[in-house]
Image (cartoon, rainbow, N blue to C red; front, side):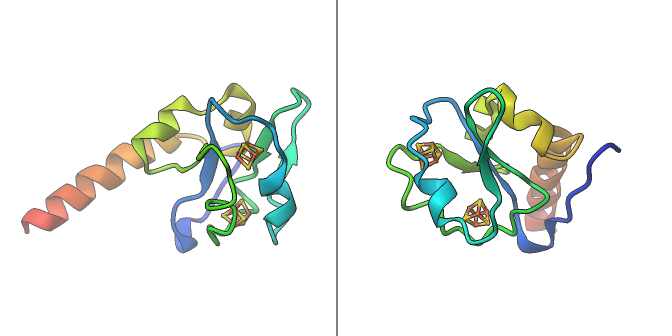
Length: 104
Ligand code: SF4
Ligand code: SF4
């Protein structure tokens, strides 16, 4: 695995299509986990983000999305290198586990 991320704090976040690059999230993030990529798009570094949630409400267009939310499928290509490999499978696995857990 090229990159790893520990989900001990919950789901990390991605920025999806619709972001207007206002930069508010970068300014409010206390962990320096959001930055402007080479593609001039803001990115969440999944390895730095402990899911403190402080960037969510300030985002004026609601484009910072937990990876376990279906809208995360709209992740921008610029964000992909900064989430751990196989995150889509992990999300699917988590949902299956939660579903099965609820039935037991
Ligand atoms: S959830 Fe917290 S740590 Fe993660 S990007 Fe947002 S403000 Fe930064
Ligand atoms: S606050 Fe929202 S719209 Fe602004 S740069 Fe961050 S993700 Fe994009």
